[in-house]
Amino acid sequence: MTARVLTTRVAAVAGGALLALSPLTAQAAQVTPPTQNAPSTHALQTPQTPRPTQTAPVIAAKGATLVDGATGTSLFAKEADTARPIASTAKIMAASVVLDTKGVDLERRVPVKQEYRDFVTQHGSSTADLQTGDKLTVRQLLYAALLPSGADAAYALADTFGTGSTNDERTASFIAQMNHKAGELGLAHTKFDSFDGAGADASTPDELVKLARHAMQNDTFRTVVKTKQYKGEAPAANGRTRYYTWNNTNQLLGSYDGVIGIKTGTTTPAGDCLVFAATRGDKTLYGTVLNSKDRYADAAKLLDHGFGTTKAKTLKLRALPADTQRD
Image (cartoon, rainbow, N blue to C red; front, side, top):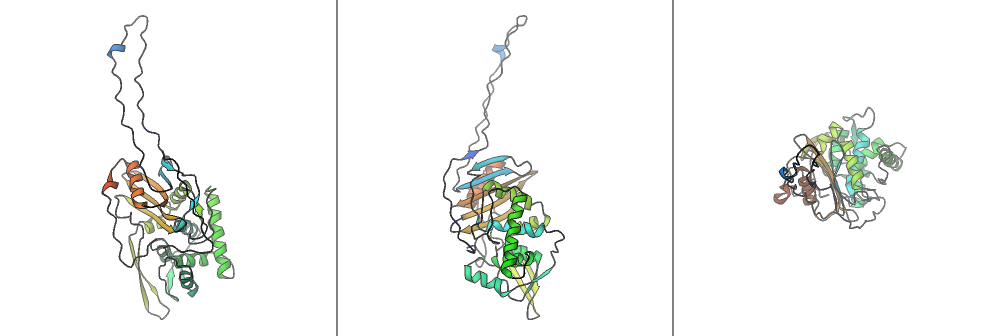
């Protein structure tokens, strides 16, 4: 379960009609009217056979969208412009702020503070189980924040890349950077008030997809979010070596052919959320489902809709190890 932090989310409950890409509708055959000097060809023409109508998928999510990754063209929308709580999908923005930092050193070592672990305990957050005194690289912290959705790792990144003389000042500065980045990307309905997504953070399906398309332009981000399991080591406080293993909470990865990420999120106000992307041949699709009772089935249905396949009917989710975080 993703962390509950600084403020309480407000769940948005809405139904709404399904909006889909306009169905392909056959047009009546165009008939050339007879001219005065030529015989009519009307009797020789055969009406065009109507193309089958593409049915929009029925999904459980209260808000959703699917777009063509190359053009941004909408392929499906359900309350796609309605802002809702987004849970840990907000960590996509946290990672983007770090990776967009000019001259960022991904191999910089960051000491784990006890405050990061205390935060997890106090708020019941999902965790990467970072150990106090260990020194992890920024790159490792990105894996820790995005795979097991560790709030402790997100705190470490915010504390490192924010400015100020105290933890609170630095994390507030980092959240301000997240909101500034949202403004730069034109995400008018996207607001952040936490570094890990369990506050009153909110966005729309359309804007989350826009954020995801931006994040996926970064090679490091793409590599991290498509990783099913990460194993690494870090210097421990006692001089020994600590070994970490983090599993990706995104079960669509490895279950639906072509999926390349991106991020799960779950809180009580937000419900189950998922931002996802998949590639088939030269076609990449991006999508979001917010507040869904069956987010993976919803995502598979949307991808089938975009790719013209029927894989969702036989979807079997990748099993996660028993000790894996759930988000």
